Length: 437
Image (cartoon, helix red, strand yellow):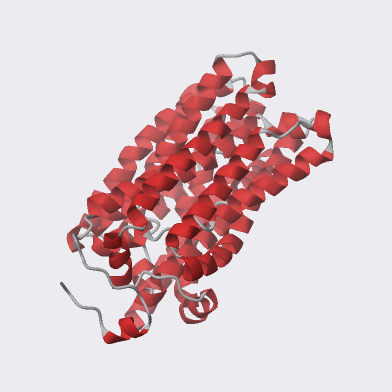
């Protein structure tokens, strides 16, 4: 058994007898379960933001304005998430990773389930909107505490020639979560009348999200609180440290890391939330059919995410992300216009978009994580993820819809283009900083 250094013992960190070394496969299972549950929550709320909330909470304005207000509330979770990270990092340091995850996931599930019980504006007036805002903030705050470090642990334990392959595993949760959420909403929408769907049918996916959160909680706790995994977290220095100290020491890496995945994060909402709103508001296409198109495209995205792992190991992660950023920039010049080209155009937009998204998103999380000093990797990775989502994705549906309505669909491509340019700039800066070390 390998001994820990005196310094580590002096720091009061736990020392365990190692029974077996957790394998990357075991870590991968925990990562996929956790990310799928989080993204399912995310997409259930996103789909309801288009199909339900404008009519339920904003019936006093037209459908477009109601959707814009709904997207504004949608963005609040991304603002609350970094605040949640700050608070839950303190909980992690004081009471441990298991306690933090339990509180965070019950808060996330509770906030999600509470949305299912919300009264409509016609019943409760502005109170219903205030409660929607409160519970959306609760979702974002709780997401800040769901960081379990398993993705970083997976990256550190991956074979050196398969770093890209293992980096893509956490990202599989996004398309899988979208597939389940889209199919579930499509089923509910098609199997009942519009009145029943708006009255009670839309609430069931939120109950399912709560149930999935509970299952995911116990599945993740079985992994992260075992002696073997705790020993591995300790040996890899994946422990929560002061947020302020991390920001002071690693601010350059955090900034670069936040901007590096912006191309994929901007595209993320451009092919998931925004197109549903555009098709629902401005075309004759029914939402059920488009939800199924989304599910089909997301299935293609699963294969693209998997392919990103192989390509990253052959070409290098920076090369792949740079190439994807160029591809997304090109796509921004014609892709959005496909949404007005009938069902064939919608399918082409979604499939091409998800191929690009899968290749880029599959490697977006780990592009600069290796640049963190070991003791700051756990906290720094969490902060970087929060800021990336806030800057690149939080306001994407709102911005894309506003641009498209006022200046045409092609204008929404400007949002994609800005994300692609940000990614290329961050990758160049990261290379420059690395060369100076």
